[in-house]
Image (tube, rainbow, N blue to C red; front, side, top):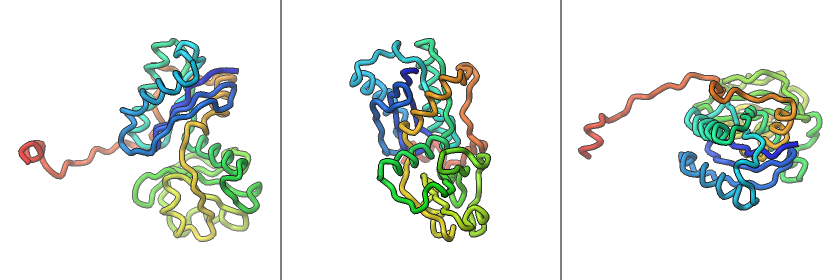
Length: 239
């Protein structure tokens, strides 16, 4: 049983949740792009004040470890590490695709989404990796992983075996662009949220699966590539 602050910043969503004993207590989130660094500290402060909780009452901080946006993951992990150092509490890492599946399962159970033969479905969360590539993994309806995490370029043949006979449900920031390509797939609107980390973070904490705060790094899956600016610094200053 624990009081955990959960942080999700691996996509365009900046989301912070307070979790007690695996249950969501409160949530703050925004889909305003490229503003995570400004939002995260404000959200945490608001959340703790709203719930009457001091930072030193937290038992752990959980952070989405990736895969996802390089910058977004670094912002979340850096903030989580700083809080863990300051309060001398453990850091718990939760897979981004795992927590996205939890959000989908919660939404189904709440009646927010409706999928025929859900219990027989293969769930396929997708996080956008640009163009027709996604970070993805398959799960059964109970949220148990059926494959490894991969960066996958989607075409007509992708997941052909999984789409044969049973419902194949895709969701996440990379799913919409794949819906017309994957014939027979069912697309549902599900977005990343720190609320999807609640049960997983509590379970990891209870099992003692914590990270080394000094050395933990996000799971990027792919190397970060620095692009070349279209204009030189001088040109931009003089404009």
